[in-house]
Amino acid sequence: MPFSKPRHETIWVLKDISFSVAPGQALGIIGINGAGKSTLLKLITGTTVPSVGTVQMGGRVAAMLELGMGFHPDFTGRQNVFMAGQLLGMSVEELQQLMPEIEAFAEIGEYLDQPVRVYSSGMQMRLGFSVATARRPDVLIVDEALSVGDAYFQHKSFERIRGFRAQGTTLLIVSHDKGAIQSVCDRAILLDKGRVSKEGTPEEIMDLYNAMLAEREGESVTQATLDNGKVQTISGTGQARVEHIALLKEDGEAAEVHGVGSRVTLQIDVAVHDALDELTLGYRIKDRLGQNIFGTNTFHKLKPLTGMRAGQRLRVRCSFPLNLGPGSYSVATALHSSDNHLSANYEWRDLALVFEVMNLKHSYFEGCTWLDPEITIEEGVAR
Image (cartoon, rainbow, N blue to C red; front, top):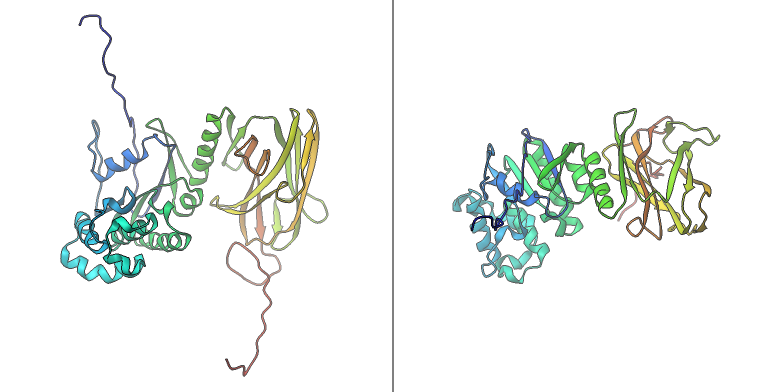
């Protein structure tokens, strides 16, 4: 009818998306539920056709866009391997040759010849990943599937992924697991309401994603570029703030470079702006890739801070041996109530401090921690 209101409106699930990933690179795709992550992966794999624009993909693609890769519940695991494998472009003869390797990697035993409907979610993921990666793909796409697996199989899977990357496989991964994104990916994009809100390093994007979650809870979010070029993200209600932070040597002098195993003190000055029934100060040490090395807080160390007054100032010192491997590290700080910042986040500050660790006196070692082992050797000892 004339003058009547339109009965529908066009809603863009994705809009103005543009990025490229070179062979051998790994891209993390981050965003809250409904941001368009899964739709983007379906466009890339060709299961959904874009309304406008194009997607160009080169080489063989293996994708896990859902748990179990769409296995038929009444078919056995073995039958589903042949069905899913052919959908991935493998022939029956090739799958027969690969079956022993698929069976060994999945480690589901006699369940391989049982209907998939009796599988746990973890077993479906094991078999699905084993099929998808039975041959090294040119492009591997994973959409949260590994999150349901046990720790052992996750480690095993990421080792295979790293091996593929070393051979030139391109990786696209959707995950809310900060450790997974930062340990595997070169860069990441943040999707928000169907658009690329930000592109950058995995650490930067994951910090911004966490800040976005905080902003949705009514907390303020600010970002600032530091002198070293890193982007610092600060979120929270602002009811308490970190005013100053320093890592002190044994003589009490602040320094940016410390020796492996040296005794240091993390000194944090806090300003309380509103009266608070309780306050917890936490810190987290991260390596240059943003992976968590160690974290604790005053709640877990049984140092309660209660009855905080507006205008009150605190200086908190945490002393410990710096048993870290050589490299660059950062400290994130958190001010909140109770045991974690999810209940009441007064301030979360990423990259509050950056410092270097050098091996000045110990023998050569590898890894991110110095364990100071004692080695003894005995001769002629029989089992």
